[in-house]
Amino acid sequence: MIQFPKGFLWGAATSAHQVEGNNQKNDWWEWEKKVGLKDASGNACRHYEFYKDDFDLARQLNHNAHRLSIEWSRIEPEEGNFSTAEIAHYIDVIDALKQRNIEPIVTLHHFTNPLWFAKLGGWQNKKAPEYFLRFTNKIVGVLSDKVRFWVTINEPMVYVYHSYVLGQWPPQCKYLFKSQEVVDNLLLAHIKSYRAIHSIYKKVHLPAPCVSIAKNMQPFMPCIPNLKNKIGTYLRNKFFNLAFLKKLIRSRTLDFIGINYYTRGLIEVKRWGLENLFLDVCSKNHSSLRKNSLGWDIYPQGLYLILMQLKKYNLPVFILENGICTADDNLRWEFICEHLKNLNLAMQKGVKVLGYTYWSLLDNFEWAQGFTPRFGLIEVNYNNYQRTIRESARKYSLICEKGAL
Ligand code: BGC
Image (tube, rainbow, N blue to C red; front, top):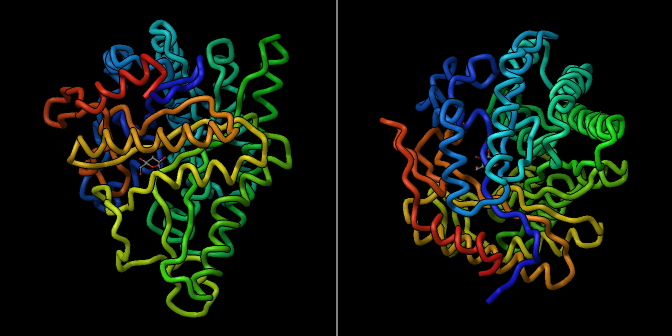
């Protein structure tokens, strides 16, 4: 039996735009329609209406933690105008978790932006960190007595890559080096928000909160160990994995390290060139590893490797996302077990881990990939919005109950 420490947090994660439905005031909503995505988010899972039922299911599955995000465009639908009704909604959502003895872990930015903010230049605007800070102050001010764990920004580097480097997500910019200004604004937004959150708690004499980001980490490895690939691997590790984290650690604005882990990155640099060194990946599917339904390698040892790489920073870690999209629920169960074994191994080697939230509680809107990939512990029928608990969820619930595998 593999034992996890007492007090370990177990649960699952979601994000507002992916599950709530009808987030009509954000940049994704507009963009989905503009580019004619195969699936637009539409009603998503109607979690905005059914959150209590969904949390009942999480409770039934022995989850004692739940990660969710607050949709900024609901709270501040127009610049500087805050919606009292939407603030009340999220207070209810957090209360609903607490009534079920589920610890909320609250994300403030999960890829979507209010339309007004996007129209002002989004994260390229020098004032972006200030806008984000104003939102942070507003929402943290009303939730501080209910929430201990805050995640300011979800996967800043993934966001920058998709939205400002590869040009696949709104606002579909394609610049490699100029994207650094977006990275800098996100860094500053976190630093300012971190300090604001701490000062709010201090002012009202609450115990200090735990604030972090959710950092997507991938062990990068050369597809074939030639010089080009090795340099590409080195650069990816330095800039994608570590640079953002290191700056926050240096500014002392991480209380723990939030990790999202899905897969490894195989690097195959096609030719000498800066863009190639920074962006090329293996496109020939060279590896013999099993894959999820989006073709990502399943590589549980990678979680161990990443955690050991972070050990030297001496901060507790929280696995804020780890999951698989698959039509094979046995594979999902195997995925969970293998990743938890690797997590536990790193813990035995001295990495302090606070908790694990599987991605995702529900099948949901997987961004540009629409509704086809199924990540959920709970299946969602998009015709009638019925929920069905998957077998893997029931098995995972025993781990949550016993704190052991
Ligand atoms: C994101 C989620 C996404 C998941 C699976 C993470 O990068 O935070 O929003 O659904 O990965 O792709």
